[in-house]
Image (cartoon, rainbow, N blue to C red; front, side, top):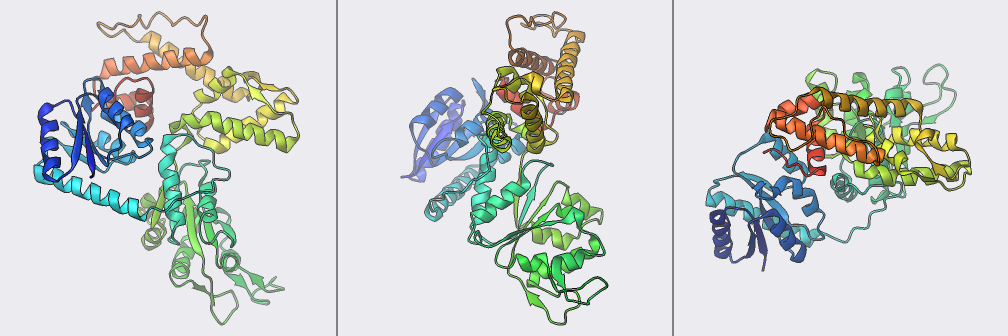
Length: 473
């Protein structure tokens, strides 16, 4: 018998949902606090969870990542008394089934519950044991689990995939993971660097040419599209593809046929297309910089990779893996690192993401030579200066602001004592105090706090969760 868990501090809501489940011949368990609800979820498995946002001992949205990490995580239906677009965005990013505003009609709740149960049943029946090959992928962050799920989903089919994310987030790595886990894994993975395609040689590069087709064509040449036959064609930085080529390529993508330069007959190539970009293709479509029809063909499956600053849990395992690989590459002895070294890395915002992290670690390994321990002194000076200035500027900013009324914290004008603290502990204390003052000064106005802090909404929410400060709703 399917079961439902209810976490809501309103007894009437709990009883209403419990009564609904009984009518549907389902079993249910309920809790009035987040702590009791999480304890219930840790002891029993449920198919569906009705989760309130405002609870006496915490915010339901803040617990979503922990709930999603459960071995048999339930489908989550959010209940909230006040609809918040930002809260809804965060909830959907965490993979909830639905977002309902109280009071919701019984009919709507029943329909949502039925759909969630049907989805779960079909997912359970269709789910075959999946053992992904994750060579080169290092992550422990819950933010990356949906990405890995999407890799498994994409590998199962031959549909076109669009991988998006900032520079250095690992778009090519995840594209290769999709290929490596697909039925085409034994065939070639062919990369096309769209940013390097020149107007004069683009068709020859992609489609090949016949001998004598143009000046300098001294022999037949096989194009990249033909090389990808049976395998995967990877369009790197597809947003840089010249407009003149986009119409031609759209036909190739649709028909899987092409004509080499100088050829009379068309050739076929059975390739699977994966494209990657760090640009906003939707915005480019609106400004006429990218063809709308090609955009919709590319985005059958979309995989969005979060930046490194939004998954700080990955910095340590990535550092361990990269340092080990670099030591092997350069013939250096295995290296460990001091806590302050890691704290400095965690304090950086990594605009270049994983690619920048690897470059910084390579410079640190070379600077340390055959020493067995990496210290902050081995890190590039520009990074150390940036982190130190950022920390000090935040400290000065705190000191210049008036203390909020009735604040239990010490006066911001009094600096936090650094003696006896590691850099990481001092940084976290300052960061927490900054957030507390931000909340005190702006109430529940999320937009004002995001604007004042310069953080993205997702990063702001992640920090509130990290310090258990509660997420505004």
